[in-house]
Length: 384
Image 1 (cartoon, rainbow, N blue to C red):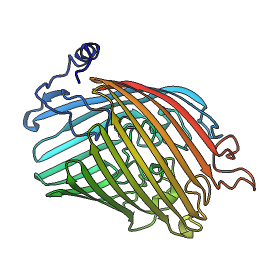
Image 2: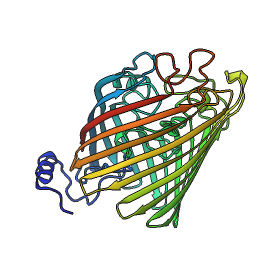
Image 3: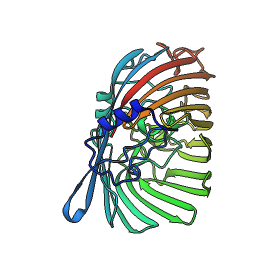
C-alpha cells in the first residue's frame, strides 16, 4: 500500500536535514523489534581515517495514568513526562566500530512503580546507558566491550525498541543494560553470543550469559538463552535487585513471521539459591510463559498485543509477594509516519496468592493489598 500524501509531506519536512540518502535501510543499532523503524537516511559525516560517522536519536514524551498506584515515593496515579531524549553516535563498518547512546530516558514495566524520568536516569545508567567498542575481524566474528544491551529475555530495554511501550512481567526478572565483554559468532543459520559481565549493573564482573539463535528459514527462528553467576554479589541498588542479580535464568523463544503477522511465544524459568552471607534467606523460583503478537495493518499502522503468566515458588518475593502469581494483557496500537510516531497503550495485571491476610502486602494500592492494576498511556515523538 502507498503511504498517504499527508504522511509523505510530513516525512519530507521532518527528514529534509538528513544527510545520507544512499542508505537503503536504517542502521542496525539500537536494535528495533518493531513496529517502529529507524530513519533510513540518518545524519552522517566523514571523520577522516575513521570513515563515516552516523548520528541519530529519539525524543519522545508520555502521558500516563494507572489505578491502584502503590505508596512508593515518586509513584503517581497520573503524570506527563518525557520518556526519551537520547542521541546515538556510531561507526558501522571496518575493523574498528563503536556505538554511543547518550541522554535521558525512562523504562516503564508492568507491576512496578513509576518515577520521573530525571530520577530514573540519575539512579539507573546516568546519561550514558550504552557505549561500547566493537572489533570485527571477519564477517562472522565480532568482539565488543563496554556498556552493552543485555542478552537476557525476549524484550529490549527502552520504550521505542519494542512493540509495547511498557516491558512485561517476565521482563521484570531480567536485567536492562550490563557492563562487560561479548563475543558474537555466526556459522550458517546459527548465531552465537557469549558475554562476561556484571549482571544487573552490579559492578561485580562475575556473570555469564549465552544466547544461541537458529534461523530455521526466513519465517521461523528459535533461540535459547542461559545466564547465571560465577560468583555472588550482595549489591542492592535502584537498578540492581539483590535476588535477580544472583539468579540463574533461562529463556526458550520462538519467532514466526507470516505475512503481516509476527508471533513470538516464549517460556522463562529462573531460580535464586539460598545465600545468607549476602542477605538471601531462602530460595525462590519463577516459571512464566508469554505470547507477543504484532500485526502490520498497513505501512503506517500497527497493533501489538502481549499476554503473559508468571508463577513463583519459595520464600522470596520475586513477583508480587512470596509464592504469588500474576497474568497480564497489553494492547498497543502504533502510528508511524517517517520519523514521527504516536502510540497508545492499555494494560491490565491481575495478581493471585498475594498473601495479604497477615498485613500489608506486596501487590497494588496504598497498602499493597489490591490484586489488580489497569494502566493507559500515550507516547509520541520522533525517531531520527
